[in-house]
Amino acid sequence: MAVTGILLVLFLIVHMLGNLKIFTGETSFDHYAHWLRDLGTPLLPTTWYLWIQRAVLTVAVLAHIGAATVLAVRARAARPVAYAHRRKIHVNYAARTMRWGGVIILLFVIYHILDLTTGHLNPQGDAANPYGNVVADFAPERWYVTLFYTLAIVTLGFHLRHGAFSAFRSLGQQTPKGERRARAAALVFAVVLCAGYLVVPFAVLTGLVA
Ligand code: HEM
Image 1: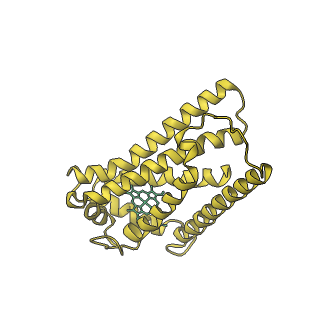
Image 2 (image 1 turned 60 degrees about the vertical axis):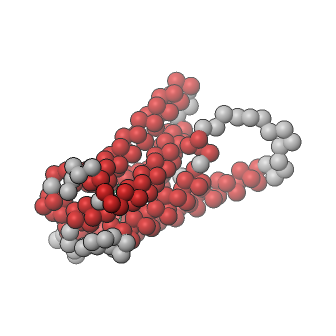
Image 3 (image 1 turned 90 degrees about the vertical axis):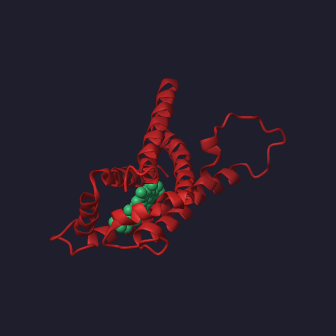
């Protein structure tokens, strides 16, 4: 879980930083999007790097879901008979929503690819002009798209908060002081990532990016 999660998080950090280039203007953002397709050339043919990245991310997502399933099955097998009196343990909202949060994020990514990568669900859908696609997507009259993205990204934030904390634990963090630090670091990380993503649709919605 931790290793595949870290790989996916690395993508999320790089993608968020790339999205922020929207504030540098249309030419610069579109240039960046085209550069992504040329990445690895001339060593690799055009778009090969992108396809390798897509394959790696797909395998990481499948392995992440696989590991989650194995852990859930193992947890159930360890306690096949339900507790007669289940002790109330304090489990926060982020921890309780990992499974459904993951499903929502997966559905969002499928929608998002059809929206901003293939352009099928985008009002402009011009592969040569990703800046225009983003601006058309989050236009004020399409406020419901921004709302949907916001809900998905907040769900991602909860998932990342608990995921990052669990990864710190899996990777060896043990002491109570370390646990407090791990919780705080996971919260800060999730908030920064959510803010970095949300600032783009809200900048378009409010006319800051047009
Ligand atoms: C408001 C926030 C976001 C914006 C504005 C945004 C923007 C974009 C754009 C413009 C593209 C197309 C890039 C291109 O083809 O040149 C893209 C692709 C993509 N985005 Fe996002 N994105 C956002 C959030 C997310 C989130 C939260 C995730 C994951 C949970 C995500 C995952 C992806 C993936 C997997 C691709 C496809 C990359 C590829 O072509 O291989 N995005 N995004």
